[in-house]
Amino acid sequence: MFAALTGLGLSTAAGLNAYIPLLLVGVLARLTDAVRLPHEYAWLSDTWVLAIVAVLMIAEFVLDKVPVVDHVNDMIQTAVRPAAGGVVFSATAAAAKIDNSAWMAEHPAVGWLLGIAVALTVHTIKATARPVVNATTVGVGAPVVSTVEDVGSLGMSLIAIFLPVLVVVALALLAFVAWRLIRRVRRYRAARRARAAASPG
Image (cartoon, rainbow, N blue to C red; front, side, top):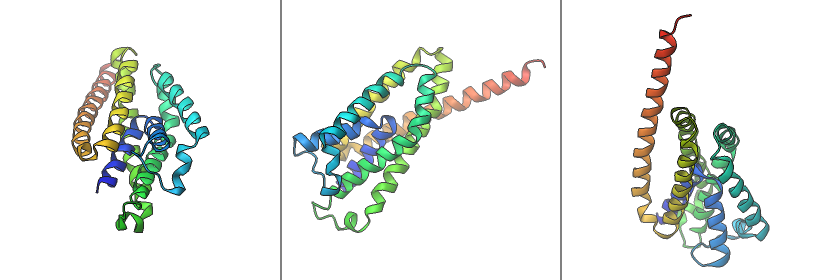
């Protein structure tokens, strides 16, 4: 149960920022006992992998805060974030084999599929809302929202690893925020259509 919550929380975090949960899982697995990766996922804690993920995370941190560039980055991340979600969910679910979780051991593909689906859902909401934020704030909101997303990704990752029981609460809060964002996007699009219909020619 806790392995599933950990995987769910990490894949949600990957939907916001692909590299933060990957880097956190890899570093903790390498330096502490907080994360125990099975043999097939040991590469996550490899020095070169961690270095590459760290560089990509820094690039993501910068690019995601620049209006227009953030939209291009989101297009690229449409493949990266779900893949990262699948990896972190599957890695932590596979680690549950160490804890004798029979269900996880018998259904190894479930972690991948759930991780991909969760990260893709979060990413889609993020990528849909960001252009609206940029348009309604003339680009000023991009770095603010991006920073909130990075902090949210880190916070969700830490909760997933150290306090997985709180993942449900964190997800409920995130779902509320997503609902508000979706409503804002719909209102913005409706207003834009109304303006287009009212304009002459």
